[in-house]
Image (cartoon, rainbow, N blue to C red; front, side, top):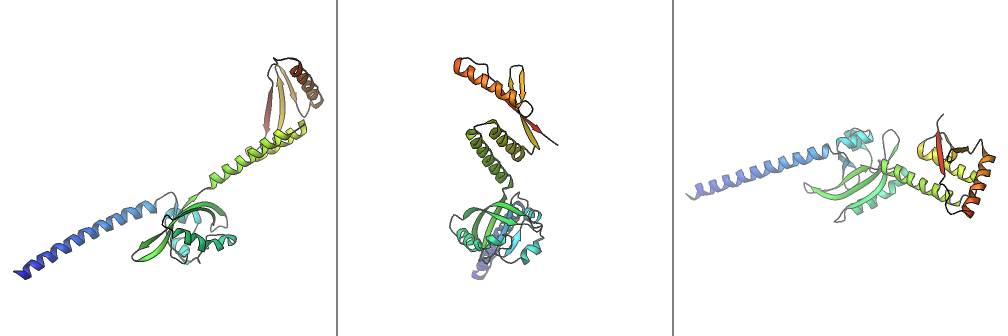
Length: 232
């Protein structure tokens, strides 16, 4: 009787463990599918910094096969000048909240990629690893550069004291912000148009008259300054 009862309990325990193991495997499979097809690059590295796993997006972005990534020395995805940061990044990832930072990664074709990395230390089968989720921030960096250029142009225009300085600032902005080959300035006052390059003297004379009106009259018709972008 006692032996039979023990065997029944043991069998029940094994059945429950088997069910739990199947559930864990199913959950692990679902998580693997999610990370494998994520839009961000996902890298799993050991505590030395050597990559042990990577998702499809990482392979496509960096241009390496999984085996090539595994064979890279620690920190090989970082440009040479940034590799000294690897140890500090791993220490930050070991914090309870993990770490989020921006850095630059190096592709197989030699080009660099600005990324935002969200990393943390995790445990798998009793071993510690660093999980890094890397987001391509190329578009954000381009936007930030253009915004800074726009701010610089506004500052130059605010300090411009003559037409030549205005034209220089506008033409530089046209090339850098829009990709245009050049720009010409047109002053329009009602039906009159003055092209800054061809009608420079007439343009200045009109500005003098306009300034006189502004000093003498409260109501002056608005004028428009048009910037025409040129392409070769």
